[in-house]
Image (cartoon, rainbow, N blue to C red; front, side, top):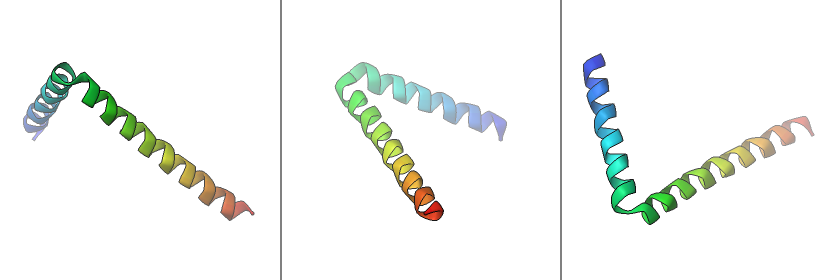
Length: 54
């Protein structure tokens, strides 16, 4: 099982590197979308926590 995990992680890393090298603009867009999603989720949690306190 550990060997399969290493292989999958290796393939994932190669895919990410290939995407960055072949299309850096698209890779930057994907990173931006990811950070926007994290930011939106954090704001939602903050609003939820604030509503619990109020």
